[in-house]
Length: 417
Ligand SMILES: Cc1ncc(COP(=O)(O)O)c(C=O)c1O
Image (cartoon, rainbow, N blue to C red; front, side, top):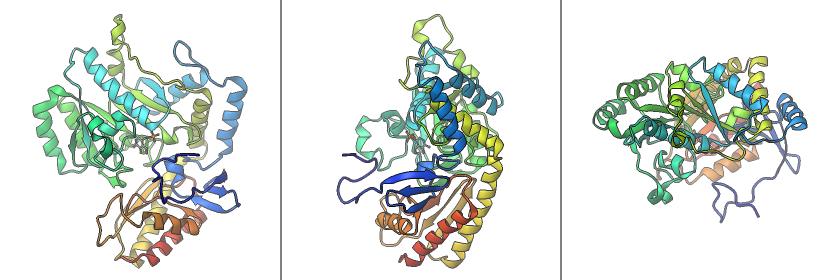
């Protein structure tokens, strides 16, 4: 009946039917317990069914289920916008709501293009992207993603975007390219510090600062996709704050509602917004999604932000980084021939499985086997090809984290290179 996402329609096996969730655990219909070591596609940052988020949604539903944001507003949307902007300490002035990461990215791209159009620089329509990038599955977000299984089939439908390597060595090339092409470039889009779906590829703060400086130098906008890195995942509320840079647009989704309801937001600077303040109706941003600013979604996001304060979540993330690093280092000592490139930042940790006899990457042939082995150990993992990563709820217990790494140890024990 259901066509499952990212799932081959032959030979994928039956999906596991989940019945309930509690903290870092999911339970199937037979009552089996699984540790959600990837926080359900990087969303449930405070664990499943956090009582404060559940209560906030329930209370909100007693008052207002939904009201469209075209011509109307409501308290949860207003309060959330206020909270988000306060967290950016004045870097941003407006919040444009949508429903998922891909749409938050589309909004960034379209706002950037129309900003230049409204400012009388209509030729600035092109974007610069990075080769490890994944920004979503809509046509625009695929166009600015790196070449991958996610967008290759659709290459004829995508707009052209100049791609650079996601590493320090590309900075000079980017500088040279922008010197010659800045007049047609609207902006640079990237996932700051970690290209997630591209294989948990890490980038230093210094490179991020370098890219931001080039964007400024050449007069192009900096669009940061913080759908994954935002909401505390790197140990600071937003990854850009870690690098001390000032982007022009930021996309948020996933953990925004604590992963409980679909809600996304694009943060917009005062300068960009100013280009849309006009008597000319054609300078309006004619873009919107039906469920934009959904009240229960906003209430969930407000509750999630309150949890950050009440549970000192960012400190937890920093402790989690230390714990996960120790766990990986322990594995590296035992399986040094099988593991490479261990990397940890905040609530994200990953390592590459050493591969021989086939190409490393997303189509690595043993992925299904790895997932099944983890599940048999009561742990949900979803390797990106030969990249095994752990991105648990930020408040995962020490005992559960230990169990996750015991499962990875078992996988490594059985893994024949
Ligand atoms: C960095 C990044 N951007 C955008 C997206 C797309 O988000 P969504 O799946 O909510 O459309 C993802 C999803 O994994 C992501 O990791």
